[in-house]
Image 1 (cartoon, rainbow, N blue to C red):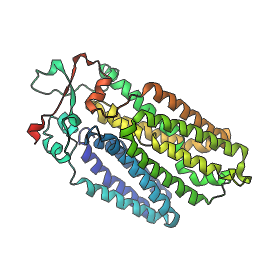
Image 2 (cartoon, helix red, strand yellow; image 1 turned 60 degrees about the vertical axis):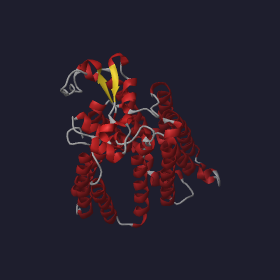
Image 3 (cartoon, helix red, strand yellow; image 1 turned 90 degrees about the horizontal axis):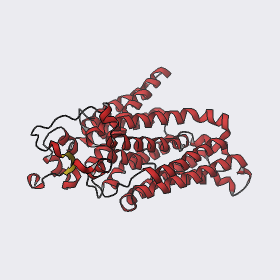
Image 4 (cartoon, helix red, strand yellow; image 1 turned 45 degrees about the vertical axis):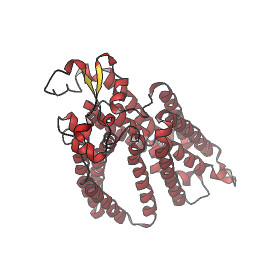
Length: 390
């Protein structure tokens, strides 16, 4: 992402994902299926952070929240398509369907410009991208050291993994916040819910058809993500994250109660499992579904945004893997009720973490956000001269 650029990295991910879904489609044995699935994970790793950084760097601060939430909204839409298609399509045909979206991604990126922030960081002319995107000067502002102003030649920034850089406040503070939000996102139990929705409903003895309930949960997630997209630039990031954590905590607690007290014999309380998961998905989608990814593109400093975002994606995918793989073991050790109550506790911890640690970024440029974590004595915001662009 740092060497090739945001756009090219996304384009590179398209043929990787396309090839992986075709391998799955034509696979005749388990090892080949496993290889295809591993490659889809590699493709997802390319896209996850890069898409969020690309969108965040290509829009004005006033609308960055809405546009930055679109990748998550699109992800929710893809999940609904998979749920609905999976009810009627054979799995090989579903893999073919997934491959068509990968090809569409490559084509859709062709007319789009490269990130102007990335171009500026490489000392390249970003005026064409700025003009194409109709960006304001604040959108591509950068933080610059005053003692480096007289230097005519732009020097490459020091490596992220030097002690001076890695333990500087501008790096370690947003890194802790970003990584923690992604961990809380996963340990809320979201992927256990998404991957095992049908199994959860059947085990809870829900009176609704399991596949219908699964599609219902997916549609609720999509609608809630749409609501979050419209609210994020009005309400701000912190209020939505706090509401999200509180709602998830309560709904996971109710889900645990549904398993513990076995309400399936009750005509009304038999709907508690699906009601709890629907409310959980609403709460998750309102804040923790997309805002941690949005904040990755906002909090990380410009020079190290690519590397830190890639590290964050790794953390996110590893925690996702651990949640999915540990669900059945936790279910056996803690019972279903205990497992969901554990997820509820993680959501409660997330609430207090956001309350005391996460700054508000609504309406701030990327350079202004970077200055929050810096000692501002020797820093200034350098803006683009729009007269040279127009």
